[in-house]
Amino acid sequence: MGYKNNKTGYRDGLLESRAVIEPGRYAIIPHDGLVRNSIPGFENVNITILASPRLGASFSDFICEFLEGGKNEQGFGGEGIESFVYVISGKLELSDGSNTYILESGGYAYFPAGELMYFSNAQIGITEAFLYQRQYNAIDGHKAYRVVGNIKDLTPINYEGMSDVLLWDFLPTDDLGFDMNMHILSFQPGASHGYVETHYQEHGAYVLSGKGMYNLNNNWYPVEKGDYIFMGAYCPQCAYAVGRNEPFAYIYSKDSNRHPGV
Image: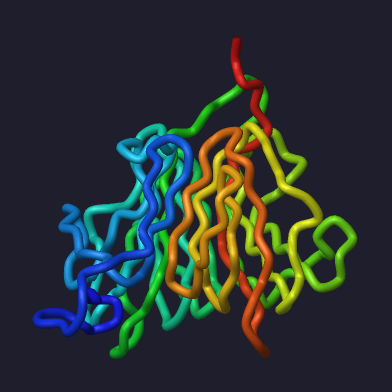
């Protein structure tokens, strides 16, 4: 039920949810039950806050539906804040106030800290986009820069040598100017991680297609297209794809290239 599947009001049956929330550790926020939020600057946009510091994340994630005339002329980002946008479907006009980019399905952009993103729906129909923000962790001698592209122009790699698990990197992986990266990981039905991962980095993942079973802190949960998964630092995690004829794929963030502190 909810605005994402146009099922609201009276319902038959019991109220129920697949949502699982363990603040700071992990969370599953299913598409069934998402609510609209009001965020200054977004007009004619259905927007939902997914991850935030209140969940225990060091970043904020959003899922947006830009309706006809949907826009943000106030700016997304700010001083010390880095931003990322990925267009799931539709066509989005992105501007920095001077330069304009048209991002179609699969289009993405990273703006470094201090640069504002301005959005406008570039079509009559709904444009769906995934947004990310994080406080940038600067280090001397290195600096991030703007990146704009489309996944269609990227070559995926076999994830840890597995030909049925593909990985797309959106940002440079070997440039210390970047303190995070955004990826898409795609599993063919029956494919899985090679092992249960346990690591320092956080993830925020939005499922783009298919169905899977996700292991979070050694508990298994079913997930599907439209679900959101938060994985905190040191949370054991892995997945395998289920279903038929459609890959289980998700876009996810990862902090990187920084000392953890002492």
